[in-house]
Length: 240
Image 1: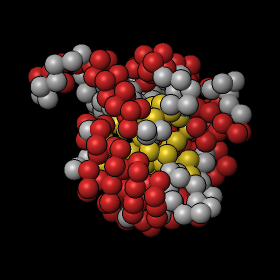
Image 2: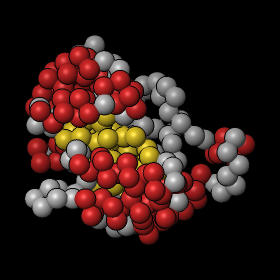
Image 3: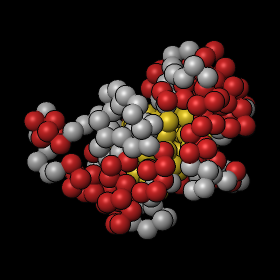
Image 4: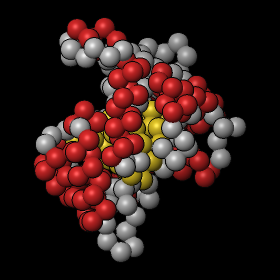
Protein backbone atom coordinates (compact mmCIF):
# COMPACT_ATOMS: atom_id res chain seq x y z
CA UNK A 1 0.00 0.00 0.00
CA UNK A 2 1.44 3.36 -1.02
CA UNK A 3 2.08 6.01 1.61
CA UNK A 4 -0.62 8.27 0.18
CA UNK A 5 -3.14 5.44 0.70
CA UNK A 6 -1.80 4.39 4.09
CA UNK A 7 -4.46 6.34 5.98
CA UNK A 8 -7.10 4.09 4.45
CA UNK A 9 -6.37 1.74 7.33
CA UNK A 10 -8.17 3.10 10.40
CA UNK A 11 -7.17 1.68 13.78
CA UNK A 12 -9.95 1.47 16.36
CA UNK A 13 -9.00 2.85 19.78
CA UNK A 14 -11.58 0.73 21.59
CA UNK A 15 -10.40 1.20 25.16
CA UNK A 16 -11.56 3.20 28.20
CA UNK A 17 -7.95 4.15 28.99
CA UNK A 18 -6.58 7.43 27.65
CA UNK A 19 -3.08 6.33 28.67
CA UNK A 20 -3.37 3.11 26.67
CA UNK A 21 -4.74 5.03 23.68
CA UNK A 22 -1.84 7.51 23.89
CA UNK A 23 0.71 4.69 24.13
CA UNK A 24 -0.87 2.90 21.18
CA UNK A 25 -0.89 5.99 18.96
CA UNK A 26 2.75 6.68 19.76
CA UNK A 27 3.72 3.03 19.25
CA UNK A 28 2.05 2.86 15.84
CA UNK A 29 3.68 6.17 14.96
CA UNK A 30 4.38 6.52 11.23
CA UNK A 31 2.62 3.26 10.36
CA UNK A 32 -0.92 4.51 11.04
CA UNK A 33 -2.34 7.96 10.37
CA UNK A 34 -6.07 7.44 11.02
CA UNK A 35 -7.83 6.36 14.23
CA UNK A 36 -11.40 5.56 15.19
CA UNK A 37 -12.71 6.87 18.49
CA UNK A 38 -15.90 5.10 19.53
CA UNK A 39 -18.31 4.97 22.45
CA UNK A 40 -15.92 3.48 24.99
CA UNK A 41 -13.07 5.97 24.75
CA UNK A 42 -15.29 8.96 24.03
CA UNK A 43 -17.59 8.21 26.99
CA UNK A 44 -14.58 7.96 29.27
CA UNK A 45 -12.65 11.00 28.06
CA UNK A 46 -14.68 12.99 25.53
CA UNK A 47 -12.85 15.50 23.39
CA UNK A 48 -9.55 14.83 25.17
CA UNK A 49 -9.35 11.63 23.15
CA UNK A 50 -9.91 13.51 19.91
CA UNK A 51 -7.24 16.06 20.78
CA UNK A 52 -4.80 13.27 21.69
CA UNK A 53 -5.01 11.86 18.18
CA UNK A 54 -4.93 15.23 16.45
CA UNK A 55 -1.82 16.29 18.40
CA UNK A 56 -0.03 13.31 16.91
CA UNK A 57 -0.85 14.63 13.43
CA UNK A 58 -3.32 11.82 12.76
CA UNK A 59 -6.89 11.86 11.48
CA UNK A 60 -10.02 11.12 13.52
CA UNK A 61 -13.08 9.01 12.70
CA UNK A 62 -15.61 9.74 15.46
CA UNK A 63 -17.71 6.58 15.58
CA UNK A 64 -20.76 7.49 17.68
CA UNK A 65 -23.42 6.16 15.28
CA UNK A 66 -25.85 9.01 15.99
CA UNK A 67 -29.48 7.88 15.95
CA UNK A 68 -32.24 10.15 17.23
CA UNK A 69 -34.78 12.65 15.94
CA UNK A 70 -33.49 15.00 13.21
CA UNK A 71 -33.23 18.02 15.52
CA UNK A 72 -31.14 16.20 18.12
CA UNK A 73 -28.78 14.53 15.66
CA UNK A 74 -28.25 17.65 13.56
CA UNK A 75 -27.44 19.77 16.62
CA UNK A 76 -24.98 17.13 17.78
CA UNK A 77 -23.42 17.09 14.32
CA UNK A 78 -23.00 20.86 14.55
CA UNK A 79 -20.96 20.41 17.73
CA UNK A 80 -18.87 17.66 16.15
CA UNK A 81 -18.13 19.95 13.20
CA UNK A 82 -16.74 22.59 15.56
CA UNK A 83 -14.13 20.10 16.77
CA UNK A 84 -12.89 19.43 13.22
CA UNK A 85 -12.91 15.65 13.11
CA UNK A 86 -12.27 14.09 9.71
CA UNK A 87 -15.18 11.66 9.65
CA UNK A 88 -18.24 10.77 11.74
CA UNK A 89 -21.29 8.59 11.33
CA UNK A 90 -25.02 8.34 11.88
CA UNK A 91 -27.37 5.36 11.76
CA UNK A 92 -29.11 5.20 8.40
CA UNK A 93 -32.11 3.74 10.24
CA UNK A 94 -32.61 7.24 11.65
CA UNK A 95 -34.20 8.02 8.29
CA UNK A 96 -33.86 10.27 5.31
CA UNK A 97 -34.91 13.50 7.06
CA UNK A 98 -32.44 12.94 9.89
CA UNK A 99 -29.57 12.41 7.46
CA UNK A 100 -30.49 15.35 5.21
CA UNK A 101 -30.82 17.71 8.17
CA UNK A 102 -27.46 16.55 9.51
CA UNK A 103 -25.71 17.15 6.19
CA UNK A 104 -27.23 20.62 5.83
CA UNK A 105 -26.25 21.81 9.29
CA UNK A 106 -22.69 20.51 8.85
CA UNK A 107 -22.40 22.43 5.59
CA UNK A 108 -23.67 25.56 7.35
CA UNK A 109 -21.25 25.23 10.27
CA UNK A 110 -18.04 24.63 8.34
CA UNK A 111 -15.90 27.74 8.70
CA UNK A 112 -13.74 29.32 6.00
CA UNK A 113 -10.61 27.27 5.57
CA UNK A 114 -12.05 24.34 7.52
CA UNK A 115 -12.35 20.97 5.84
CA UNK A 116 -15.87 19.54 5.94
CA UNK A 117 -16.01 16.24 7.81
CA UNK A 118 -17.03 13.17 5.88
CA UNK A 119 -20.46 11.92 7.01
CA UNK A 120 -21.26 8.23 6.79
CA UNK A 121 -24.44 6.24 7.26
CA UNK A 122 -24.26 2.94 9.13
CA UNK A 123 -26.23 0.24 7.29
CA UNK A 124 -26.37 -3.08 9.18
CA UNK A 125 -23.98 -3.79 12.06
CA UNK A 126 -21.41 -6.53 11.49
CA UNK A 127 -22.76 -8.38 14.53
CA UNK A 128 -26.12 -9.00 12.83
CA UNK A 129 -27.09 -12.10 10.88
CA UNK A 130 -29.99 -12.56 8.44
CA UNK A 131 -31.82 -14.59 11.07
CA UNK A 132 -31.63 -12.11 13.92
CA UNK A 133 -32.55 -9.20 11.61
CA UNK A 134 -35.81 -11.02 11.02
CA UNK A 135 -36.42 -12.65 14.41
CA UNK A 136 -35.13 -9.93 16.77
CA UNK A 137 -35.69 -6.74 14.80
CA UNK A 138 -38.67 -7.68 12.65
CA UNK A 139 -36.95 -6.62 9.42
CA UNK A 140 -38.42 -8.69 6.63
CA UNK A 141 -35.93 -7.77 3.91
CA UNK A 142 -32.98 -10.08 3.45
CA UNK A 143 -29.75 -8.77 4.92
CA UNK A 144 -28.20 -7.72 1.60
CA UNK A 145 -31.45 -6.09 0.49
CA UNK A 146 -31.59 -4.16 3.76
CA UNK A 147 -28.00 -2.96 3.37
CA UNK A 148 -28.66 -1.82 -0.20
CA UNK A 149 -31.94 -0.11 0.76
CA UNK A 150 -30.27 1.87 3.55
CA UNK A 151 -27.27 2.72 1.37
CA UNK A 152 -29.61 4.21 -1.23
CA UNK A 153 -31.17 6.37 1.51
CA UNK A 154 -27.69 7.52 2.53
CA UNK A 155 -26.93 8.45 -1.08
CA UNK A 156 -30.27 10.25 -1.44
CA UNK A 157 -29.53 12.25 1.71
CA UNK A 158 -26.25 13.46 0.18
CA UNK A 159 -23.92 11.85 2.70
CA UNK A 160 -20.44 10.78 1.66
CA UNK A 161 -20.87 7.05 2.00
CA UNK A 162 -21.63 4.12 4.27
CA UNK A 163 -20.23 1.92 6.98
CA UNK A 164 -20.95 -1.65 6.01
CA UNK A 165 -19.74 -5.20 6.52
CA UNK A 166 -17.10 -6.39 4.03
CA UNK A 167 -19.53 -9.10 2.96
CA UNK A 168 -21.70 -6.49 1.23
CA UNK A 169 -18.95 -4.38 -0.35
CA UNK A 170 -19.11 -6.04 -3.78
CA UNK A 171 -22.88 -5.52 -3.89
CA UNK A 172 -22.53 -1.86 -2.89
CA UNK A 173 -19.70 -1.15 -5.32
CA UNK A 174 -21.78 -2.48 -8.19
CA UNK A 175 -24.53 -0.02 -7.26
CA UNK A 176 -22.47 3.07 -6.43
CA UNK A 177 -19.56 4.80 -8.16
CA UNK A 178 -16.18 5.44 -6.60
CA UNK A 179 -17.22 8.85 -5.23
CA UNK A 180 -19.47 7.04 -2.71
CA UNK A 181 -17.27 5.87 0.16
CA UNK A 182 -17.44 2.42 1.69
CA UNK A 183 -15.88 2.08 5.13
CA UNK A 184 -15.50 -1.48 6.31
CA UNK A 185 -15.20 -2.82 9.87
CA UNK A 186 -15.11 -6.53 10.62
CA UNK A 187 -11.53 -7.08 9.43
CA UNK A 188 -9.91 -10.30 10.58
CA UNK A 189 -6.88 -12.29 9.41
CA UNK A 190 -7.50 -15.69 7.87
CA UNK A 191 -8.17 -18.21 10.64
CA UNK A 192 -8.50 -15.53 13.31
CA UNK A 193 -11.45 -15.63 15.71
CA UNK A 194 -14.23 -13.27 14.63
CA UNK A 195 -15.42 -12.56 18.17
CA UNK A 196 -18.82 -10.87 18.17
CA UNK A 197 -18.52 -9.88 14.50
CA UNK A 198 -20.37 -12.28 12.23
CA UNK A 199 -19.57 -10.97 8.74
CA UNK A 200 -15.80 -10.57 8.35
CA UNK A 201 -13.10 -10.42 5.65
CA UNK A 202 -9.34 -10.04 5.56
CA UNK A 203 -7.92 -6.60 4.77
CA UNK A 204 -6.95 -7.66 1.25
CA UNK A 205 -10.38 -9.16 0.58
CA UNK A 206 -12.09 -5.97 1.70
CA UNK A 207 -9.95 -3.70 -0.48
CA UNK A 208 -10.23 -6.02 -3.45
CA UNK A 209 -14.01 -5.98 -3.10
CA UNK A 210 -14.05 -2.17 -3.27
CA UNK A 211 -13.68 -0.78 0.25
CA UNK A 212 -12.21 2.72 0.49
CA UNK A 213 -11.26 2.42 4.17
CA UNK A 214 -11.01 -0.51 6.56
CA UNK A 215 -11.38 -0.30 10.34
CA UNK A 216 -9.13 -2.64 12.31
CA UNK A 217 -9.31 -3.02 16.07
CA UNK A 218 -8.39 -6.12 18.03
CA UNK A 219 -6.09 -7.71 15.40
CA UNK A 220 -3.75 -4.75 16.02
CA UNK A 221 -4.64 -3.31 19.42
CA UNK A 222 -4.81 -6.64 21.25
CA UNK A 223 -1.67 -8.03 19.61
CA UNK A 224 1.41 -8.73 21.72
CA UNK A 225 3.29 -6.38 19.37
CA UNK A 226 0.81 -3.85 17.89
CA UNK A 227 3.44 -2.22 15.67
CA UNK A 228 4.37 -5.56 14.12
CA UNK A 229 0.69 -6.46 13.67
CA UNK A 230 0.07 -3.14 11.92
CA UNK A 231 3.15 -3.57 9.74
CA UNK A 232 2.09 -7.10 8.80
CA UNK A 233 -1.42 -5.96 7.91
CA UNK A 234 -0.12 -3.08 5.80
CA UNK A 235 2.28 -5.47 4.14
CA UNK A 236 -0.58 -7.77 3.21
CA UNK A 237 -2.12 -5.03 1.08
CA UNK A 238 1.09 -3.30 -0.06
CA UNK A 239 0.29 -3.57 -3.78
CA UNK A 240 -3.28 -2.29 -3.54
